[in-house]
Image (cartoon, rainbow, N blue to C red):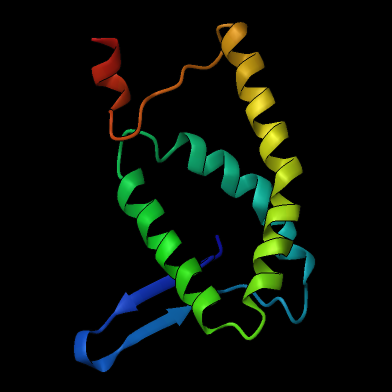
Length: 116
């Protein structure tokens, strides 16, 4: 098991970050994580604490972009990199729904409440 990212708020002492990943030794590790993260974020978080987790992830992303020297280039790069992934993911979910293998659960709903 590897810690992807840990972010701890120590109050007045600031925020501390930690990861077990070393992208300087293995840059591919980040690209390899993306499909795993997509699957986990789309299934294991749903109906539990996705609103809180996604809000925290977005705040980290916003802070990263805000301090960047090349914010527009980063936004364009992320947009380009995620277009194909997004289309493939949504096409797969749509196909699975048609086959009865997937159900869309609205944000903030718990799966067990949806079936009762």
